[in-house]
Amino acid sequence: MAGSRAAIRYAKAVLSLASDQKTTEVVNNDMKLIANTIAESKDLRDMLNSPVVSSSIKKASLLEIFKSTNALTINAIDTLIVNKRIALLEHVSLEYTRLYDEQRGTEVATVTTALPLTDDLKVKVLAKVKELTGKEVEVENIIDEDILGGFILRVGDIQYNASIANQLNKLKREFTLN
Image 1 (cartoon, rainbow, N blue to C red):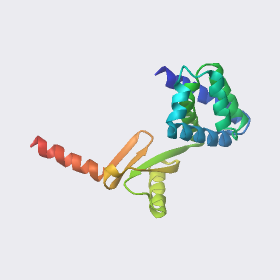
Image 2 (cartoon, one colour; image 1 turned 180 degrees about the vertical axis):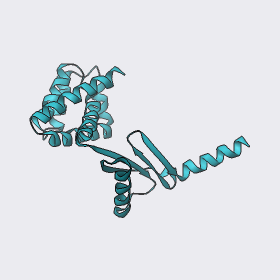
Image 3 (cartoon, rainbow, N blue to C red; image 1 turned 90 degrees about the vertical axis):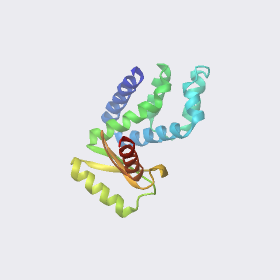
Image 4 (tube, rainbow, N blue to C red; image 1 turned 90 degrees about the horizontal axis):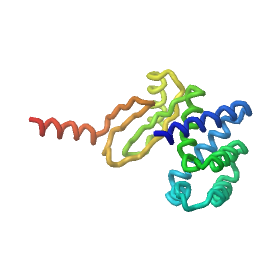
């Protein structure tokens, strides 16, 4: 998709500037905030994607919402608006965070569980994933009651599905084939 390639290019440019200015961590926190805010707000997402809303209104809204962000983050928003690519803001934010983690040698392991992970279990997951990947790992816990129990671990492009829902589906397929 052309939009995702463009988002990667913008994210690389912002990361390069942030590296030069030694503000990569601050900008990463801004990018996480932007991505989370857009993901949680359908109205904001709709406004950014709307061809009817003028660029000046989009800019004013974003500057008000993200007024406590770094100047480099504000410049990235301005650049996206000037180039009529503001609809890519969420993707640019996500790509920046991914590239930042890659640059630091950090991976994000998403663990989907039916209930929140306990601190003890989180430490065990961190140790196991670090042992498997050899990288520093951050654990992101996603709660999905549909998996019934067990867990789904995703690190990079590797996924291990040990959920009860997955095991029940396997049994169902075995019974329907016989």
